Length: 411
Image (cartoon, rainbow, N blue to C red; front, top):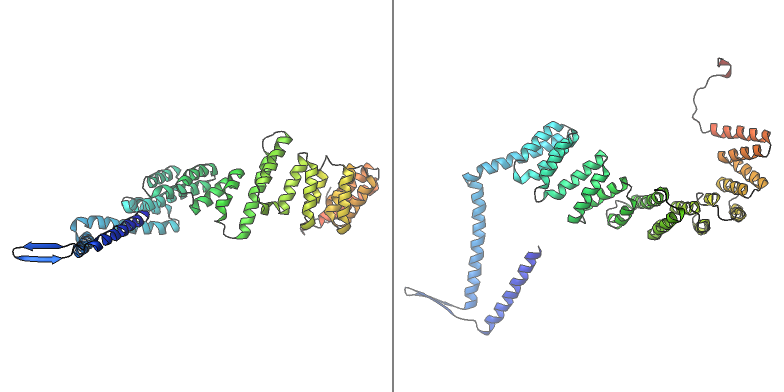
């Protein structure tokens, strides 16, 4: 296309130059032959020559096309092309209907025609894959890759089949090579994103997100995918190969800085990051982040992180929890967290009151904590009563199934 535009521009420039040249002097042409003569201007003579050359070119192309149709020498090629097209169509329907062997035979026969070789080889590779013949599949893909237009098509199909087989690493390597040939191919980008996600290569996938954004089908699906990528990367850093807490904390902060603001603002992401900050010793930053977040986006997962903070005084954490409880007095998660922080502060009475309130709100975990605390305080009767209440709460979540009558139980 670019070459055609350049050629047209050159022709326009040449035409303008010739016109300007002829304006100064139209020229004179005289043709004589056996007493016959023709007089005209140079411009008109050139115009006639251009028209004649164009007419000859058009007639030549038409005659060539006509000869290709009627020529007896091309009859065999036309017949082979017809057979290949028919076999390709029949192979496609056989593949759709699940007749893998028949489809493979038809595609293999169609691959003898050069015009249909790429499509036939890809169809044969798919049929071989469905039959579990990996070696045959790879041979057909290699044949398709040898053709000019087959490299990308065969690579995409090979990557897709590798993902179906559960080999995301193999698909990832193939797609990264293909990306150098077709960096904006939408199918390639989607397959690469899938392969990176299955390989849990979160850092590479995060770098690919701007390109994948243009391929998103809808906003909700994209938001969920984008959030999963960044959360997966943070989790990988936190749970990866053992390193010192300071190194992990620095890496987590680096990931957080790279994260888009729209992702950072989501409560689930903030809760996860705050939890890791608390886990690796930066409780002050975790507390600050939680305070800022709950002002506009309350989420029960955020206050619960306070019980994991070890380098901030428990009395200070408890004061913060109590201030939140003033506006949410019946929140069982807040009450449970306040009870556990009270235990850290060795405020047994407060802890017992918080656990008891959370238990009345239906929190089975708070009842377990209350039973453990009551037993430690020597109130075994209270501990047993609380455990019975907890069992009753748990029973309410069990399915309604037939049980034997008490008197029917044999020794």
